[in-house]
Image (cartoon, rainbow, N blue to C red; front, side):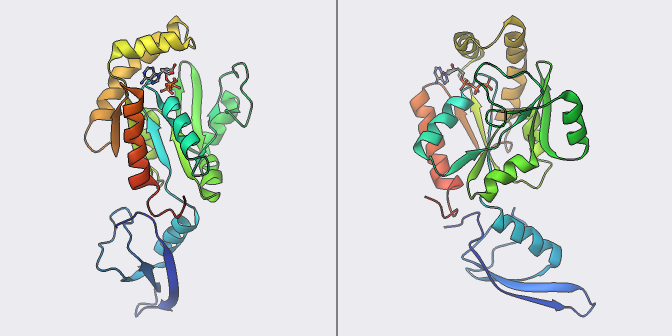
Length: 257
Ligand SMILES: Nc1ncnc2c1ncn2[C@@H]1O[C@H](COP(=O)(O)OP(=O)(O)OP(=O)(O)O)[C@@H](O)[C@H]1O
């Protein structure tokens, strides 16, 4: 089976080539697919690579499993799916804690539900490159810091990122290389009904969310943007699809479970 994770790096040899460039040689097993950048030649691929490349590989191998991105319009059911996944796989996944400039809702704890921050601080951090993605929504800033993802990866868990389309576009500019799942509502009418029933939105935020939804769905449906697109009509059916994807792809080769 071709898995995305590097299992072992053994017998690393460092040397200078004929042009005095630093090189190293090592063996990967059993197989790997590093962003399709190297063609698989055999079960045991011998490679000659640059120091920077092995650093990147080593970082990937030691940083833990690939993250898992969940995207979809507000109210499409991302949190619902994620909650179920965490119940079924309590030790495999972890959430990165997002930053936001909005005020805490009742019961929300700083550092647990969000890192609550100020607009000034968040802008400074973004300028310093500390964020993987950030977006302004409904007048508030939201974002995922690199550190928050690293904390989860370092613990050996699949870091789950619950982000919007803007965020996905930004993550695609980084070296994070996660799995991408898009959760699509069965219709805009159903989405509106679910958001109203959830009772978390006022008229303005409801309107903003519904206005954004159509464009987000178009992006979600574009070929190549996501590894999995799930229509969240029947909850159990939708969740089963996600669960199968997680077992077949996301946990494959992670040595967890
Ligand atoms: N298949 C479904 N059928 C009916 N209701 C659903 C279904 N999936 C989720 N819901 C309900 O729809 C509402 C929105 O779901 P949820 O909060 O999970 O959306 P979300 O994508 O995480 O939204 P947000 O991005 O705003 O956090 C919730 O009240 C949830 O219980």
